[in-house]
Length: 407
Length: 189
Image (cartoon, rainbow over all chains, first blue to last red; front, top):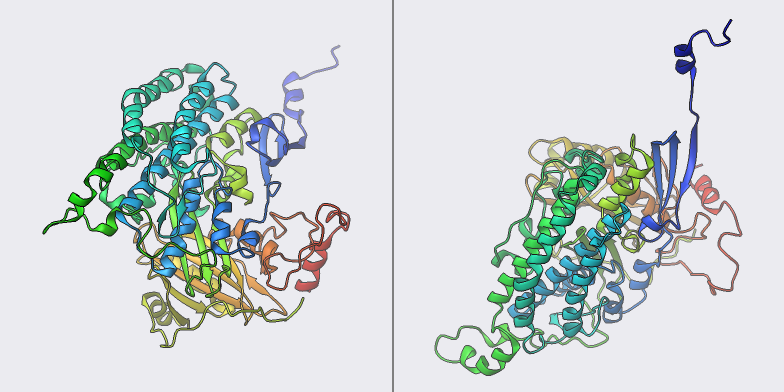
C-alpha cells in the first residue's frame, strides 16, 4: 500500500509561501543606490516597492540658499550624465522670467552641446544595460571608448569632462575652440556612424540578448502617461512626446530631425529607441554645425566684419556673440519677480525647473522635475509577474540615474 | 509648527487684476469658482482654487473631452505668506495646452485632498511635498517620507526651517524614532 495515493493531489496542494526579499541599496545593478522591497512567490515577483532617497543631497534646499550665479555650478550634479540639459533647464527658467534674449550663435552652441551630451548619456546607458544582462563581452567597453571621444570634445569646450557648467544666463561661457566643429564633424562622419552599426551587430540580433529583453516589461501608453513617464521610455510605447518638437525651445524649430517612435513598448524597444536616437542626435549635431551662424570660430574671426557690415548684413552683430549684449550678469544678479516652468528634453525625458523669483539675488523656490523620478515610480507596475532576473533587465532598460531621482 | 511669515513675499501681485482665462471660464460654467492669477512667463494660465473644489475640478479637467488634461507634469509646493501652497502643472498631450492650479492650505492645519487617484504621478509627488513642506494629503494611499530619512525632524523647504547644526557629528537623525509618524498623527487627528 503506497502512502501517496494521488500524486496529482499532492501537486495541487503544494503551496509556495510568499516572502519579502530586500534588493539593494548596495546592489551592483541598481545604478547607484536604489532599494527594492520585493514580494516573491518562488522566483516570480508579485509586488515591488522602490525605496529612494539614499542619494538625496537637498538640491532644492541648496538652491534656495545660494545666489542664482552660485547655484549654476551645482545644477550639473542633478543628473550627472546630462549636465548640459540640467544647466539648460535652469538657465532657461531664469531667462524666461528676466526676459533675456539669447544670441543665435549661443543657441546653436547650446543645441550642439546638448545633443553631444545626449549621445554620451545614451552610450553609457546602453553599455550599462548590456552589462546588467551579463554581457561582459565587449559592448560596454566599446560604448565607453566612444563616449571618451565626446567627453574630450566637451572638455575642450567647457574645461570639464562631466560637470560642464558651460551655459550662462544670456548665452554660453565662451566660444567654441578653433577648428572644433571640423573635428567633431569628421569624427561623427568617419567613425561614429560606423560604431553604431557595430553596436547593432553585436546586440540587436544577438539571440541571447533578444531572449532576455523581448516580450518583458510591457509599458502601455495609458499607464505611462498616468505615471508621467517621458523620454525614450514613453516613445518606445508609441506616444509621440518630445519637447524638441512639441514645444520647441532654443533653436530646435530651425533644425530638421526625426524623433524615433516605436510601438511595442517592451524592454527591447526601449533599447532600440535609444540606438535610433544615437543616430538622430549625431545627424542633428551635423545639421546644427552646418547652420551655425558664422561657422567655425576660425572662420568667424576672419569673416566677422564681412558678415555683419554692409547694406544687407547676413547677421546682426548681436547674433554672433556668445553672451547677450549687456547681459554679462554680475555675481549678485537679481532676477525680476515672476514664475516660470522651463523644460527641456533631456536624454531621460522631460527635465524641468519650476522657479519662483521674488526679486532678490536668491531664488524663492526651485523645484526640479527630474524625469528619472517618474520613470522609477513605474517600476512596481512593470515587474509584477516577472522573475527576479527580469527585474534587473527591466529596471536597467528604464535608464534611471539615481542622483536624478533623489536630487 | 510656527505660523511665522516668511521674510520676503514670494510673488509681488501685479497691479492690474488679471482677467478670467479659458479654463477659469470652463470651471465657472461647471459651477466651480476660481481666482485668476494671470499668466506666468510662458503665458500659461494660473488659477487658484478653494481646497474643497480641488478634486472636483481636477476630475472635470481630466475627464472633459475637449480639455483632456491627461498629464500631470509637476506637483510642487511652496511656502507663502497665506500658507503652504500646492501647485499643480497640468498638460494635455492632445491639445498641447497647459494650466497651473494653486491651492493654499493654512499653516496651522496644512491638509489638502490627494489627487493620486486621478493621476498616478501625484502619488510620489505628494509624498515628496509632504516630506519637504509638511503638507498632509488626505486619502493618499501611502503618505510617508520619500527622500529624507523616515525620522527626519522638520520639513526642510519651509522658510522657518532650521537645519541641524552639525550633520556629521551631531545627534544622528535616525536615533529618534518615529518622528514622521508622530507628526502625521498629530496633524490628522
